[in-house]
Amino acid sequence: MHILVTGAGGFIGGRFALFALQQGLKVRVNARRPESVAALLARGAELCQGDLADAEVAQQACRGVDAVVHCAGAVGVWGPRERFVAGNIQLTEQIVDACIKDNVPRLVHLSSPSIYFGGHKRVGIQEGDIPKRFADHYGATKYLAEQAVFAAGEFGLKVVALRPRFVTGAGDTSIFPRLIARQQRGQLRMIGDGLNRVDFTSIGNLCDALFSALQAEGEALGKAYNISDGKPVPFWDVVNYVLRRLELGSVRGRLPYALAYSAAALNEGVCHLLPGKPEPGLFRLGIDVMAKDFSLDIARAQQYLDYRAEHSLWDAIDEFCDHWQANQA
Image 1 (cartoon, rainbow, N blue to C red):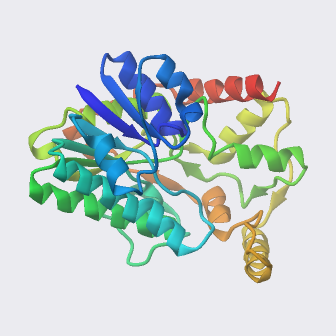
Image 2: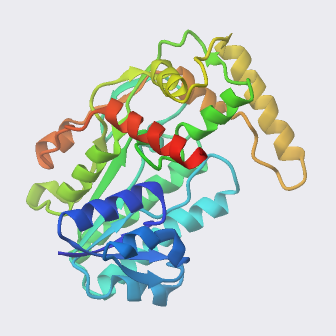
């Protein structure tokens, strides 16, 4: 099978592209800068250089492949809506159009369970539990991008979307780095009672799920799938494990939820007023993520994708810590 992986310069896209090469697939990667995917090129990946927002680049990238694994997109919780619309909705529409025009048989889309998040405790979330209002531009645009993918199924494109929660492993840039930086500055505090349980996903388990999605047929197509390790764990136990592994000490102080949430709201308000609207150090959404229970029901993926979370979360976290220490030296 010949596949295109978008976003291969990032954590998830890069790890899956490597996994696919190891499985014997022929892999094409897209990047604006070849150096961001140099390790993949050294292992035999082919490069399509350029910006996928350009329709010609998107068509060139998709030409001749059997499937596209679309991992590129705008991430974060801060910034104008236009950035997320361009990076998530419009970019995905560009990929969909290129797949249809070049008769690519299959599209696997990396979405996000951030679409579910609304600042409340949510346990055992199923794929149909979509809120009436989204918490931020990221969640809203990821959901609309999904809809563009599923609509392409009417043109015969075989489509699947995955919603993995808190993906970690070597190269993870989104979960722990911000917390590590706050701990290094002596600013990290446990929010609330510190007992909230959340889902994580080992990068190995996500790679397995993406690989299964490349082979899905029949009833498995045209669906979104929650992906996690299937075993919610106490968020702060995981954070403290990482900090101890990195010899930064455990989080000792606590902040009441209401106080932390109010401080984050004030921080956001000030940043909205400052020139350039710089990203605040605290977000209300981030406070909720650190204080609320949040877990996914992965039964659909188990049923239709034969998904089995066989990789250990703790191995993935050790992998992250080893990689982090090696790159800080």
